[in-house]
Length: 431
Ligand SMILES: [Zn+2]
Image (cartoon, rainbow, N blue to C red; front, side, top):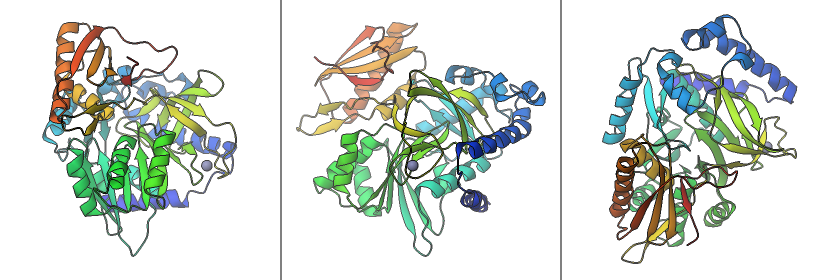
């Protein structure tokens, strides 16, 4: 059933002709919005009244992650209770078993995002199929008669990715909570045609390939979620010169964008309507309305990212907004030396997730590395002492598990404010 749905959506995306200009795209979005309002939003107690009145998009309230979570029960169209969903999601993370679903095959995903606060996401099997079809269409070229092996490095399986498994594709999920050395061995064994992971992991794998601890030859590299720095991109290109490179701008809130054949990141404006709250001439905060979400509608949702618009036209001719880069989500890379002299690289995403599993009782936190063995935890919280203790314990345990010991961690009240910059959760500061 799922496979049929995926094929249906895939066909729909293939047949959907390219948009020749912004005007055509705008008209398409307008139709999508009206359909979304009439079919989906009327089922959400939070939006019903406005939807029945056929109110225009700009009359709908702006929403951020905090409000979105606070209104969880009213927003979702399935009558799912937040506590029930949260318990299921936490249990799945704990057991590393993502098969349990809510009634009707609804998957619950837990996200941390840039703020480090917990977010809960509901995904129906219909939405799952749609997502899978779109990823297939945009990032994994389908070759008939030849099976493609795709290695996906993820924080959580969340069922979503298991949906794509067929005769032309084999997906293998690599849980980033496992030690990288083990993962690398499994990966070499699997020999993926397509390798999809966060840049920090791609970088670590490239290093292993250079050191000749593994040998893989993927034809396609897909970088997910974090910001990819230019030097990282260069190193990946050096390591796998023949691999086609693709970056995906994806978060739990949706499949937001993807690089085109010219390496330009375009927003998927046929799936997501993007309002831009400009900070200056080129930098803006995206406010998204996602036409593909029906279990938990995303309407005028303000993301935590800052996007930088590309002013010159992309040669690919796409009328979708082109980006120079995505700011924010750009935590620094912290490295630690182990007793045996090897280097451990901290994965910010993973650490923040471990923290979110233990506590949500903070306003904000930042972890800064001052010297090799010196860390400072900046924290804003009501019950400061208790939360500082909880977070410190998670950090030290995470490091100890990776054989990094004798770390000096001090806690400081308040947050490091960088002028006008987006806040990083993990950063380096000069000693
Ligand atoms: Zn382009």
